[in-house]
Amino acid sequence: FGNLQVEAIAKAEQFRLDNDSIGTLDLSTTYARKSGKVSFKTISVNDGYNFDLSGLINTTDSLSDEIDINTTFNQTKIGILQQYLTGIFSKLEGRATGNLRIKGKANSLKYLGDVSLNDGGLLVDYTKVYYKIPAAQVKFTDGLIDFGKFQFTDTLGNKGELTDGKLYHNNFRDMSFDFRVKTNNLLLLNTTNSDNKLFYGSVIGKANMSFTGPGYDMTMDISGAPTDSSK
Image (cartoon, rainbow, N blue to C red; front, side):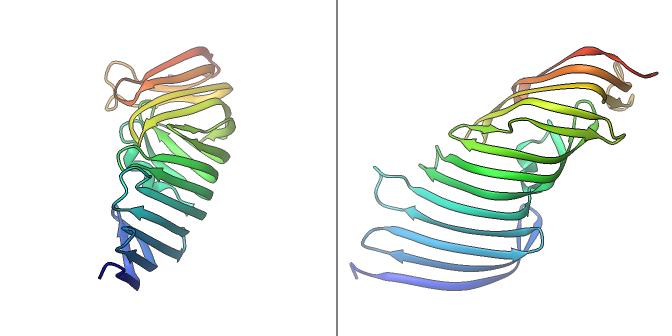
């Protein structure tokens, strides 16, 4: 049995991931006992979840990478990432197209690739302002997700620009932010007394903003002035 090889082909109906219904997945896998390697491929052709994933898991060689996975996205919903941004951003929306490679040891994976985002949006939890992101280019390198520069709008149609957007992480843990925004006229604050009894209201203004630091102690700095009769 030293050269035992096991192959399997399956179809998963109504597959769910983190409470999201993905749909139907076509699965295939091969295990070779001699090498200790498991290769696999998954194809999802579902509305909002159109992607294919293939890779290799090494179960025996401790000196080489344990995991090497390649994923291709085609207008795939990004809401599944919400779990990593709880307390900072919510109502995460948009669709991703591109390639992402995940490789390395299980406890120190590297995320590498380039992904384009369209029809995006998110709510900044602290300010309670929702912003729409028509398009953005996201680059994944080891320990860093670089959102580059892109324009966005608030719910009133005012525009702003992300001039620098970097998210540092350790295998999607210990996240740290370095986001910088400038605008001549944008909804900056949209809170009520139920959000913050000491500081709340609606503010439209000209500003330079930054969100920096680790997720558990992020600092938001705003320098600017109101441009309307904010309250």
